[in-house]
Length: 373
Image (cartoon, rainbow, N blue to C red; front, side):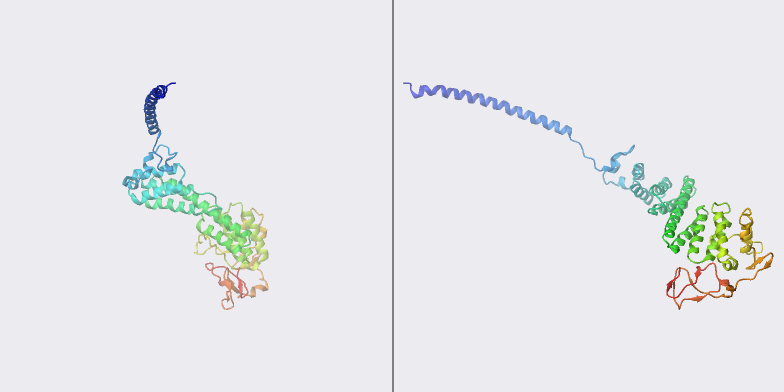
């Protein structure tokens, strides 16, 4: 029999050898893991980058991105930095942000040599925000205001000619907007609201061609409101002030229709021509309606001259002799109320037709307790 000690000896020796080998292998594995760790740290450090401070620096051509980062005195007050930032937004078509920066520049550096340029670009930013005339019209009004401010605050600047062109474009857009809204009201049957819009076009933009169209619509609106004398006045103003306008033929025909429907009103008094009265004659008085009507009839190439009769001193004449006026002229004091106001019995008043003042609002016959329209 073998002794227990002799049989276990090889096992003990083998175990010692195995432990030595395992210990040596473990040491090599540890150094290997340490090396791999350092490599990973080095790689991760090389791949990291500083995140962008603000998305506004994306796609900014030819600019320094650092002007958008931080909150330094230079960023907030330096004129060159502010102008760079404003120009960057303008090039991106971010006009709302550009407006803020240009205005910031002007608030801090109004005496700077770039102040006229900043004012021009500020106005241009508002102008570029304009969409269509049937939408919000405030950008057009603001653009016109800023362009006009450029002319007054910085006279004789190099952008003056461009600013005047833009101002005229703004005026055209505003006039078209009021005309568009007036036509909308007219189609809806709100004739008084429509007339107010057309009146705005004539009063604010008398030099534009669209004012002729506004006068035509005013005549139609007042005819619908039951005030043919005001319809007549606007038709005559259209014919007198826009002799070559395409609406001339329609105006002459409409004027003849009013004469047939209301001969007394047509013959009664000189029209006020509220938009822009014609120059007075040599005796200091405006031409009478009879002179105007005969001139208009004679300048229609004979097509409508037979529709008009001459008038003298407010009376109709036939072959040079005054014609008898209808019996209706005996009613010289009709009950009338101002157009567009509530007509009550205590407020109704007698307004002789021959004493009507062209500066007062138009009047029409109404019943007490009704809205006069």
